[in-house]
Image (cartoon, rainbow, N blue to C red; front, top):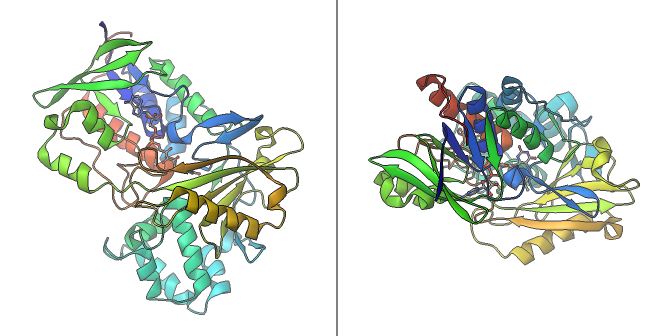
Length: 436
Ligand SMILES: Cc1cc2nc3c(=O)[nH]c(=O)nc-3n(C[C@H](O)[C@H](O)[C@H](O)COP(=O)(O)OP(=O)(O)OC[C@H]3O[C@@H](n4cnc5c(N)ncnc54)[C@H](O)[C@@H]3O)c2cc1C
């Protein structure tokens, strides 16, 4: 078996893994990233279909916050283009652009009880939050029974957190909308979301390497400390010695790689019982005729499963061949945190699309992906995250199963990477173990 020595190995080139690797490399640690896929970005990557750049997962990259700061810190260009206006609602066939009016303008148009709900948002802003057990749906029922408001809250939970309002703790919903970025300002990458990962990958390669199509097959530990990783590279087993491993594969896969006996018993219990993978359905649609003119993302009102849709080519025409519009629609199954019938849920989402857009049948469906189980929309729903520490010295997790409370998406993944690498770099002198 071939062997190497590096300062750090990152397993997985998803959002969390690449942000962590770029920060470590920038901080002076020679870092090797391995990923089993043939491209960067994990669940937020991009594929080419019939000349369209089709995103697998994330499309909206938030401005501001840790994600953007990571790119500035490591000197990676962040090529994202903001749609204007960015977010609107599509209710009863009409676009409602709430602009700067936000929640008060939106709720004010829909219900007489708006002021009661807004008061609760103000309470949340000052730290007065419901406990983690009450669902967003039950919390909202306390203030209004308006069906459109309930449908909107369901679709916001679905769009941001990939779950239903009955599944998301109200505490997580309110935390996100009152103290996180809440996708107020975002952009799309004109190369497809993979463009942002390629940029971050270049930053990693300044002080490290990235091996694609290279699965990690084992994490080695001894006496509670990490000692290295074995990977499968071009059919050969390669041992990489290191005392620092960051796993972006999710806690469950990380435990499988190191073996459950290596971990403290309470960590294994958490991995078994606390994770709640959240599912969604992605429908990429090409159309000669415009379906909607709004250039950003619309969130729907009353639907069966559909929650939101982005008009990608309006802001980034290079994603589609000339003469075509490219849209991506998202739906969330019921339940999103449990088992469901994928075919039936996709059928309901397509029914919604036909209902929302009279000319939908002339459009061409490029791909339909059901994100679930071990390749989900969120490895754990907001409110059900695990710690980033694994109980093994030198072995950390990053990504969307170990988010800060109430956060979501690539921004949350970047935040996990910052927390972990800040702790690592603060404890280590700048050093380099050598090149792989
Ligand atoms: C349909 C959809 C739409 C979304 N929309 C948005 C959005 O608009 N904005 C937003 O911010 N977020 C969005 N998200 C969420 C966002 O895409 C995810 O939260 C984020 O991409 C998850 O990143 P991660 O760091 O957890 O890594 P992952 O994406 O899970 O990547 C981990 C990588 O590790 C690899 N790996 C696993 N095991 C091994 C192994 N043993 N060896 C080597 N490699 C391994 C995997 O193949 C993968 O490439 C969306 C998600 C989905 C599914």
